[in-house]
Image 1 (cartoon, rainbow, N blue to C red):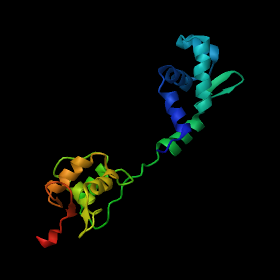
Image 2 (image 1 turned 120 degrees about the vertical axis):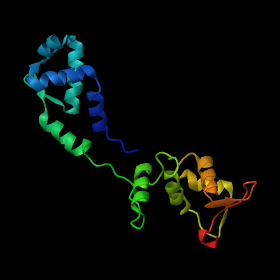
Image 3 (image 1 turned 180 degrees about the vertical axis):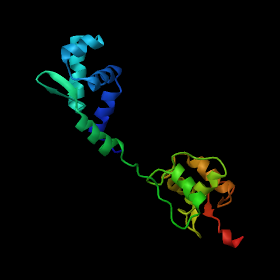
Image 4 (image 1 turned 90 degrees about the vertical axis):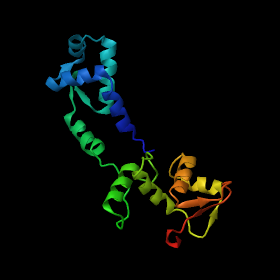
Length: 185
């Protein structure tokens, strides 16, 4: 997981209602700690703690005991951190538009499954998964689970869905699985 302490501290700062009230007040005009405490009915200790944290994350700055919003820092944070495009899975060019849309919606950037959809979208996900199985090769249930676990924890459900869709077959006791050659039907 990509953790960024700066953005986490910023989110923590903005998730507190008292700190948001302080930012709201400072968006109107700069003020001293005492003025902020009095206008927002905060104790001296609470106002100091909140202002110190807001200063730490760069949301406010202090000059000669007067606090003001740090608009430059807020703009940089919004532009560089919050407005970044999130990476997404990029499906192969040879897929139809509908399949591409389903894969983009249901796959994480690394190709793992965010959420298993219902039919008919499930078929697109199953067609995606089956490409990771070789033709003319037998797999044990454990090997099938190992391949599927890379994409989602629900290996039993995905294994069953692949068999039900008739793109993966098995011996009834589940000891051997193989990819179905759709051209051989």
